[in-house]
Length: 93
Image (tube, rainbow, N blue to C red; front, side, top):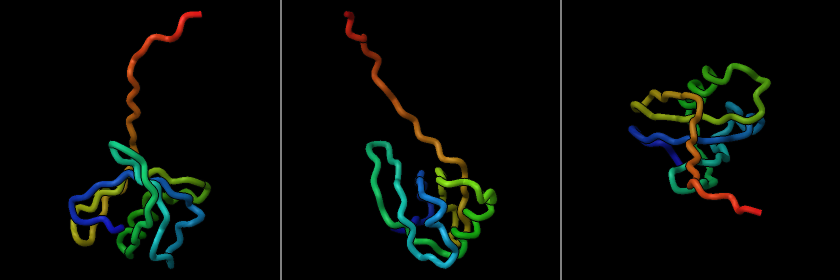
C-alpha cells in the first residue's frame, strides 16, 4: 500500500521493524470501520519525516498519523483513535 497525495492514515508498527534500508513496513491501519494489516511502501522522504518525529530510540511501538501533503512532503503527528461505546445498562444482580 502506498499513501497518495491528500490521503491520511493512522498506523501502528514495531520500531524494531522500521529500518532505513527497508522498502516495505508491516503496519496495522486503523480506519473508522475496522483495523487491518498491510505492508506500507516506504520512500526516502517518508523515512526522513518519521525519523525526525521519532527521535527517541527507546520507543518500542509507534502509533502515528501520516498525511501526505505533496509529492515530497509528509506530515507526521501522534496517532489518535476514537473508540465509541454505546451506553447501556449493566445487568443488576
